[in-house]
Image 1 (cartoon, one colour):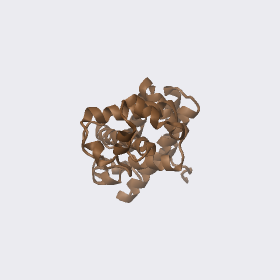
Image 2: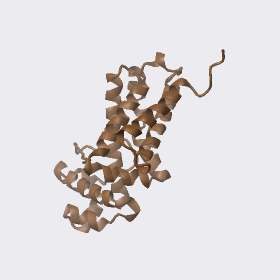
Image 3: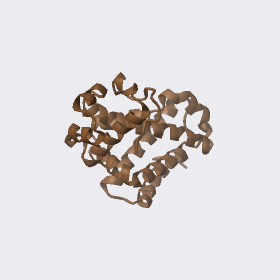
Image 4: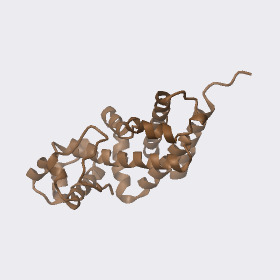
Length: 218
């Protein structure tokens, strides 16, 4: 289940709850987050009901609007919490594998697939990825951007293994790998692939990127 472990405001995406939300005790924040996730697990954003969120959270309608502008703000805040967690995991994995960027994305992909296996997460993320539009995709990608962590990224990444001459190239490579990762997460749900099948297809695509798209001239 997605949780907010701190009352501090998150700063990775474009949407935040209102200030009054962060004035709540963490337990009450998580109660509202859990209620919203339960509803967005039942139905995609366009079909979700604020009334159901209120029912699950056991709060009056007026209280919800003290914390969020609308259900869309609540939805994107849940995505923000999830993607910030993934970004932190990514940077930890990068250190664990001694700066191997492809190995890091593979570890993150595996971890996300394991998270999706959990009953409390699967329906929620399934609704996200199978109903992803341009705004949702951009927001999801924004939350996983590494530009704000570029100094740490270039410090930890094994640059000698990459065809990258500077930080800008490194960021571009990470964006390509991030895009491939998101696409395979969509296909995991769309094609109802197992953990093992999803990993095979993902690693095949990363293998092609590592080899390069053109044959090397002899």
